[in-house]
Length: 295
Image 1 (cartoon, rainbow, N blue to C red):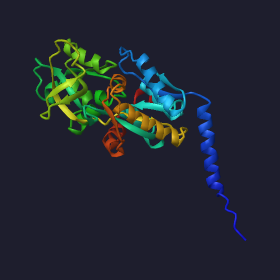
Image 2 (image 1 turned 45 degrees about the horizontal axis):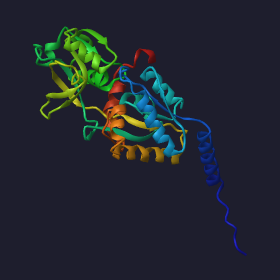
Image 3 (image 1 turned 60 degrees about the vertical axis):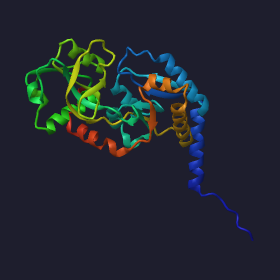
């Protein structure tokens, strides 16, 4: 007598669950969460076109959802209030990297990450070493900014320097451009930001690059910033996650879509996510006091 093969209950349940998830996704919009630190960048129309291009190829309607700050973006990701998200490294870790599906990391300037954290001063500043910043005023970017707050503060502490005692005044400026502009105007003595260096520690590109007449230099650099991540939350079926990843990679290879990619993400391409690259920042976050709203 021939034996009738019946799929295991576990396998059948998994298929039903996957089908159910796929059906729910198809019946609603797939949301792409993001926060633009620099609100002056009007990428709305470009973002709409890009999301439409991805959505058509995935077979869903992909709708961008801009949120007012990084804290809300992290909260939405944790609660699965969005399906996909563009997450800077601090947000990625605070949103619960272990419970997310990282699809790709942003690649800038031909290398993953592509920028270092730096303390920037005016060219005519008398400061040459960190100790010269005693009683100086500093501009930070945001409590959720890796380059503009978290990494430089931890690095100073590891070097035996307490930022709260080093600086006379500390202020948040909201964006890298605003923090650097405060230095250029002489409003503050130093700021923390991202910078591309020339291999000898000299900053050659950063938020000041588009500021006419800005003459600044790096006082100190603290190593490469882990790259931003495009991630999916747990409710997104595997086939959609895979297709989104493939379409993002295809867009990066497309001559017509690459400028759109650059305009939205400031990235030249995508690369696989390497979890170990976030270990240092994870340690920094553990050592730093959490933002006020989390206390």
